Length: 229
Image (spheres, rainbow, N blue to C red):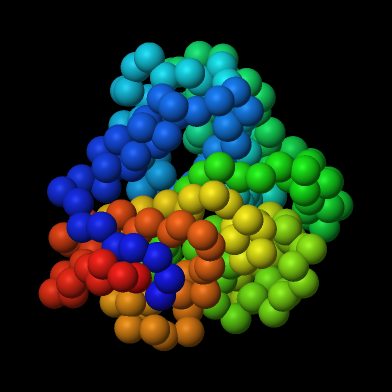
């Protein structure tokens, strides 16, 4: 497991505090890559309640997305707009990851977009199966080790996670100045324990200059955060 584990009372509030501190001192053009899932919803709701942040200078990207129409309830971007962007007002720019067309073509288009961007912060979650972004156990994207491949189309070969997906690769994530992984609730306890034990799960393969794991007591269980990662 790479990174630093921080045990926090509330993952959404800790996430909001961390991102608010980042944005408060940021220059225009700050590249924020967002995620989906239940924990992300609560994180973005908490972040939306932090007032006075320079959102007009923040560029919004996604780290993964379901290949569904933009208004579909399963769309990560639709959730982000509803929970965060509509609440904070205009941002510098907003870049949905998928709107239409074959997933491979959409992945190539997003690759061209983000290839010129150095992510300032990439927000990720952890699935009960150990996936992060849309990098699923046993999926083809795990075998893509080309450092120039930043975005790919992917599916869950285990049938647990619906829809075809677009996702940042491990190489795409590793380019970020900071990666923040939020893990909340007892449903994530087994996956987190396995990642911390060094099991070969997708989330355990994350690399980067600065990876922070925000975890709560329910997710950590009897484990202890390792200050050295």
